[in-house]
Amino acid sequence: MAVVSGLALLVAFPPYGWWPMAPVGVALLAAATHRRRLRVGAGVGFLTGLVLFAPLLAWTNLHTGYLPWVLLSLLQAGYLALLGAASAWVSPLADRIPAAWPALTGVLWVGQEALRDRTPFGGFPWGRLAFGQDDSPLLRLAALGGAPLVTFAVAVAGGLLAAGGWWLLRARRDAAVGRWWVPVAGCVAAVMLVVGGGLMVPVAGARSGQSVTVAIVQGNVPRLGLDFNAQRQAVLDNHVDATIALAGEVAAGVRPRPDLVVWPENSSDIDPLRNPAAGARISAAADAVGVPILVGAVLSGPGRGQVRNVGLLWHPGVGPDLEQLYVKRHPVPFAEYVPLRRIARMVSDQVDRVRADFVAGTEAGVMRTPAVVLGDVICFEVAYDGLVRDTVVGGAQLLVVQTNNATFDVAEARQQLAMVRLRAVEHGRPALMASTVGVSGFVTADGRVSDATGFNTRAVVVRQLPLTGGRTLATQVGMLPEVLLAGLCVVALAGAAVLRRRAGVQPG
Image (cartoon, rainbow, N blue to C red; front, side, top):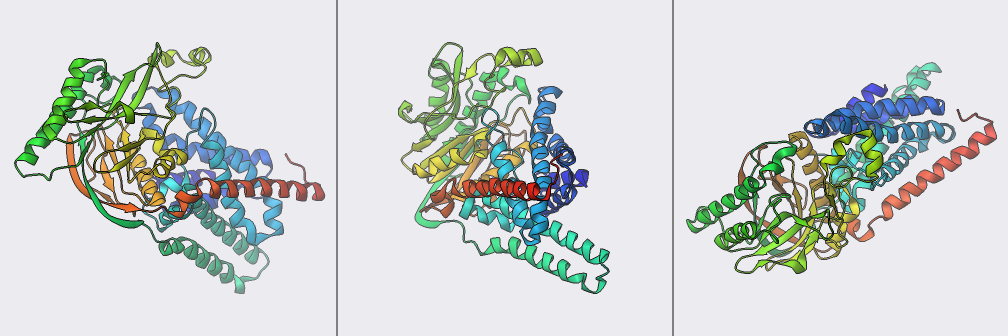
């Protein structure tokens, strides 16, 4: 059951996208850990986690070797081990109040994700249940309570399946064969109600009557892999040349004139503020197209041995707008900086590939252009609830995700695009993802994808996006749904402890 649970959870995520399998995976894990000893529950959860995360995160070993992939998969599986132990721990509470089993399953999943999203070194939210629901009716729930509410709904549906199966087995064991259909029918009806309830949630926000035309330039790289930045000039030239070609098509009337051009993360790994030739190339592109370019750049400093991953507005005839520089707020540990470098080097000297540590920014990525206010996040930042929300609270009308997938594969890119879809629905804002190699594309405020590009190819896509106003309930309440649900998780664990003590149940 643990293995099948992990496989069911896995295929819910892109590139498979079989979202109904997520509740099935949750149900199997809940059933497998029910009434088990804590160590058995932890072992079952760990096995489920390995089966889920090892293939889900396989893109991490494509160009970096097996060690990062193995360590990251083991770490993430450890959180599902905690979930398995917690599920076993609350079994007396589920037995005392059988109708509460689905809700218990829901709050335990939210609590596990809340912990995994933040620890260690800022957490790693990849593989949240919510991120596998991009084609599901449950995605709409993001407009009410963000990713935590979507995860809760998926887990509740799984808990209903587990409870229905458990009640069915009890009915058969007690020879109540004539009533076997009652729990099954109730389970199916409740699951359909939970999933179908998402269709009742209005999405897309209020139309503002404004629109903006945006061009995404996906310049591609000479070679995939870690050495993509060994050809930094070639990568920059690819994006400059593609933008100048776009300007020619606009002048010829083949393409509509954009209000803004977006380049991806790492489109200029040569610091254009310190390298006059790189700055001149970007200026040539901006002057040719005649509109601002949002450049993904790597800047030196502020200190020695430090760099910054930034989104930088470059205006035609003016140059860089240093007053609206967005510095990535959540650099990736062991990829963009190395915490505890001495200790990490004892595990693997590969950490020395990261020669300069990226410095974290402190301000939300809100940038004002003549045509639209942008909410910029960079690469994996799209997985973190607060970083995206901060841009919308700051006035963003369009969500922008600048990313570089040249060191990964198409599966990782599609998993990231699923997160962009959730963020668009969560905040009622149109969004886009601009990648060096793909997948790039636009997302409407109701989560629909358009003009998605291929992988490892050069592409330029232009689209007019209607802008929306107002704030969704999820934007207004922020972390509150997660805090409440995680708090209920703690209450459930404490309540189970009381029941166990009264019943004299041994914890092991």
